[in-house]
Length: 520
Image 1 (cartoon, rainbow, N blue to C red):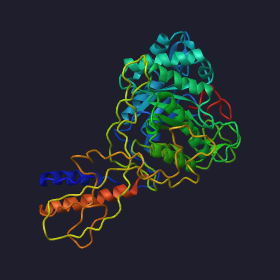
Image 2 (cartoon, rainbow, N blue to C red):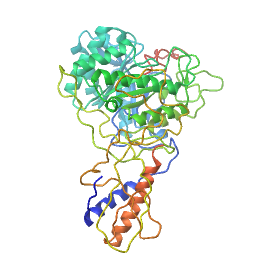
Image 3 (spheres, one colour):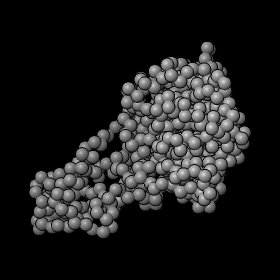
C-alpha cells in the first residue's frame, strides 16, 4: 500500500476518532446482552415470536433479558374473503393485541418485521386470485405498521404449486417497486444439500423477473434422516442455497452469500433424534458471520425455555439443556459486522456499501435495490507485530497498515464448516472451516488513496506499540499521546474479534390455541 503524509491536523482527527472507537470496546461474555446497532438491517438478527401460540413470552421482557432488538412476528394469514390479511387468519391488523405489542416493542427501542404464511393455515398466496390482489394484501400490512421489512414464508402447498410461486414473485416485484428500501426476505424449507426442485424454481423465477430478494432464507431442520451433527448439515444446506442463488442470478460467491440466510429451530425438532443445542447454534452463528449472511433467525422465542423435568419439547420449551432465552442471546449477538471469536459482541469497523446489483438481461423490473448487507463489514486480521524503534529525530512520514481482511477462526465449532457430501458448483467454493486470511478482503474506508487503515503507534517509551507504525514525532505531546493510546486500542479491537415447529409441534396444538402454521 502506498505511503501517505498526514498533516498535524489530520493526525489529531484520526487519533481522536480512533480513541473514541477503541474506548467503546467491551470485553463481555460470549452471549452477553449487546444492544443492536443502527447498521443492523431489520430482519438480520430477528427471532420469531408467535404471539398466538405456545404461551408466548412478553417481547419487551425478552428484549431486556437478551439484548435482542428485532422480532419476526408470526403469522399473517388469509381471513375473511380469503385475501384479507389477518394475524393467524382471525385477529385484526389494527386495534388488537398484535398492534399493541408492536407499539411496546418499538417504544422499548426494538423493531419488527411481519412474517406471512408458514406451514399451516390459509395462505394469502393461495387465497388471493391475482398477483395484484396479493401485492395489495402485502401492502396493507406494510402500511398498517410502516414496516421496513417483511418475511414471506413460502411453505407447503404455496411452495409446491407453480402458479402460486409465480403469483408470489410477481406480487413481490410490485411491493418492492412501491416501497423503495423495503427489505424482502423469502423463506422456505431446504434439504440437506440445498433447495429442492420447487425451491430452486422459485429462485429462478425471481431472478428471471428481475426481483432481487434481500435474503433467501433456509429452514434447515426437520430433515428426513437422523442428523447427529445438525450444525454441519445446516452449513451444507445453506451452502447449497447459496450456490442456487449464485447460479440463478449470475453472482459471484460473496454477493450470493450476502443474499442468503437461515432461520434455525432451537432444541429438538420434529424429527426423532434431531436437535440443535445452544453450542450448536453458536457454531452456526460463526458460519453465518464468516460468510456475512443476510439473516440469522430463530424459530422460536416461544420455545426458548427449558422444559420441566422429564417433559418433552413442545410449544413452550426446547427439550434440551439451557437457561431461559439462551438461544435468543446467541441470535442477538449476530450483527452486520460480527466475526467469529472467543468474545461475544461485534467489531465496529464499517466498510463501504456494496454496489447496486445487476439483474439478468431481459429483466422486467427497474433497478434492483441494494442488499440488506450493504455496509456490512468484517473485523481486520491484526497485522504482524512490527517493532518500531523510537528516534529523537522528528520525521514526517507515516506508514498505514493494510486494509481489513476477513478473520475469525471459528472457536466453538467442533466440526468442519466445509460440507463434503455436496458436489461443488463451478465458480463457487465450499466454505472452509477457517476462511483464508486475505481472500475476499474488503478495505477499511479510506484505506486507499487518502486515508490509512487502523494503525498502532510507537510510544516514545522503549516498549513500542504493536500492529504497525505511524511516526508522529514532531507533533505536540498531546497528539503523540492520543495517537499512541488510540493505536493500542485499535490493535486490541482487531485482535479480539467476535469470537413451534415447522410442520407441527411434537406435543400438538396447545389447549385453546391455534395449530401453529409453521416454524418459520
